[in-house]
Image 1 (cartoon, rainbow, N blue to C red):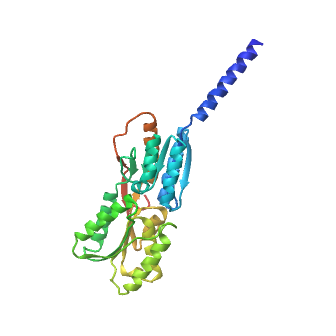
Image 2 (cartoon, rainbow, N blue to C red; image 1 turned 180 degrees about the vertical axis):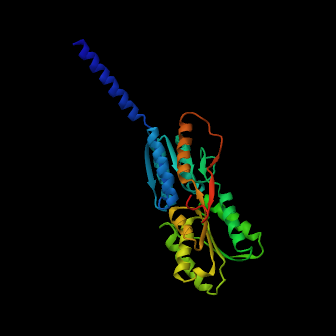
Image 3 (cartoon, rainbow, N blue to C red; image 1 turned 120 degrees about the horizontal axis):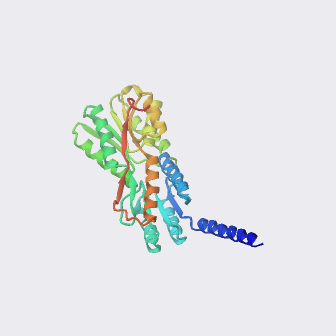
Length: 307
């Protein structure tokens, strides 16, 4: 009888411990308006994989291009007293939400966001070096002269930085003229609107050689521009296209040896995993001193696209 009581007591203790562990599982909110972007999908998937290993509960919130809604979702997560919040959005545009998280004592981390004292840290690629590499590639390929079309997105700090650096490099070459600086609609990912805008630019500049290159701050506009050039029958003009991200579609296009010649490979999975590691370090009591943590990148061309 005593043995049964002891076994029963041990089982009860084990159940209570398991219940306590489940109740104590850290809850993490990941909030982004940009889940339609392949890069963001890779970040989030890698974060989720690490979170599973850590035993966390992760709630991914996609506001589908609505930045204002992201503020409300950050405030909701803060009120729910989650263990941490991860954002993939311009911190300056969601400052009210970040202030609410600070007041609630909930730490917030950037996943390819932007630097601000309201974040514990921001994990990203070095946008300055990526833009410098691709803009320099364009400059060298066109011999330092010609008309360049730029696709930018100044509303998002990591991408805005790329445009600033590319602008500087092109301005440093008197023979290069920025023919147009385009901000595409990104709600569907950016390819369709970039194609439409590039088609209009091609129509306005019908002469062979009127456009020497397309520099895109990420791959979707580069792919849209490529589609427009192909549809217009102008692939033979030697218009050089570069992007940033080296996503699967971009790699496929580069591998074909056509107009899309180069892109910067970001380690998206590395960014997501590094954010998870940073969250874990913080929750374990470590003070993270780096306001920005950079993950390495690599220039992809037809020479190494299959590596």
